[in-house]
Image (spheres, rainbow, N blue to C red):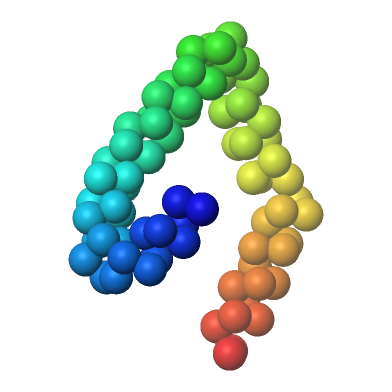
Length: 74
């Protein structure tokens, strides 16, 4: 219902609505991300360890080289 009211209000109403909502959504996103980081603070070392361990496995290196070669030819 709200979407229809905004859409039928014209481009100025849509612009006004998005001008208001984009900063609110950005702040809400940052709050949620910080909350998730705080709640999972003890898992941060495991996260970085698993990322780096997975990035340097032989199959990961193979696929990186394969895709680099494949995409370079395209």
